Image (cartoon, rainbow over all chains, first blue to last red; front, side):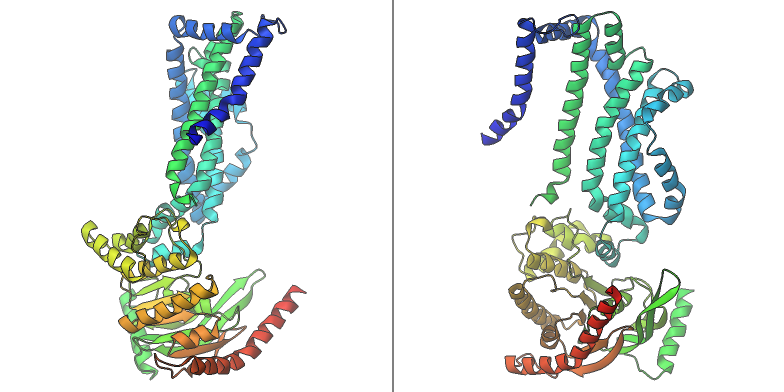
Length: 251
Length: 279
């Protein structure tokens, strides 16, 4: 019961802001032509669901985001562990990572479009590259800090040396890896929408820019709301998954 | 290749007339190169023969290389010179004949107590049913029945070290290497753990090499105490405690005082060196 109360409490400020928004619109305090009321946005949301294939666009966007994010997560973790545990990987990969790190990844979207076309591949590529670095760096940093005694214990108990990075270092580094993955998850949505804004024929970013160009501002807000809802749901879901994976860290 | 090397070393060991102790440490030296190529000698000229079933402690001031020596016996760190042999075979890497326990437990925090104790058994390819059996036996032995499904995080330091001891024992090593195993525990827990370890040793008669800087702990547990000096770490003296299992508190204290007198100068010297390094 108290847990439910705490959960509801979390959403109270959001609901208050929504109420304030609607009240300000009703009172005529904000110009509806550039800031439509909440009620008109919700109405537009229902309209988009039926008339504009909101679910189809959302599905396409989620597919791109998940593909890019999962690729970045998988490859990033493997690369981070290799850099932390093997000299050749550190030699070969680390300088590249350090140089690419400060680059704003959205600047590469036009290049990805040039190379991979205007479909899914360029979006997935941009999301992959942007989400990759936080995963690699968090994995690398935490893997490097894993206690030698832990590694030696496994070695002594019969784990072959080549498997120790995967059987010991990886799970030991998991708490920080998951923090990096959460940052990557948030970045993946930013890159998704940026890439779909730039050039696309489907997806939520496309829908937002189309509706905006047509002057359908309640519709545009509704599409933004859809992206937000998906992002929040992804983050909440990720947190639940993380808490389950890290149940051993609970005191 | 390595078999040939083993033969050669076996002969060399036989040839020096040391005889064939179960654990032989012969002319061991460890130096590290730090920074501008000036080698730092951690331990030097260590000769030590330990019989099967013996309990030997290594004591010395911080930085005397006692842990380094233990890590070399474990095979985690190679010797720069000299050789370490277990039952005649040169140590090159960790093996199932030697188990180790560290000061800060080094449990796998993502595994339950049972998962930790079963870890080495899984690596040995033991069947699920058999390893559950073996793990339970050792969990019961260290008094952790009822905590099988707890994660290490939820356990006190003493309980975590019991898990680490059970994890080591489950693989049935012949030599137990203990690296200041009770150093991170509170004084009361430490006393209890010392008594329990002595009882375990009396029951199993395994060979134990025990690193500590607590002289009384060394006297209480061991048959022989190796006193080490610092920079480089050398053996200063090897003292037979000559105390049986029913030795009185007074006898243990007396022996500990005697050893402390021997060690005191070394500790003072090590502290002075630390000070001069800081300045």
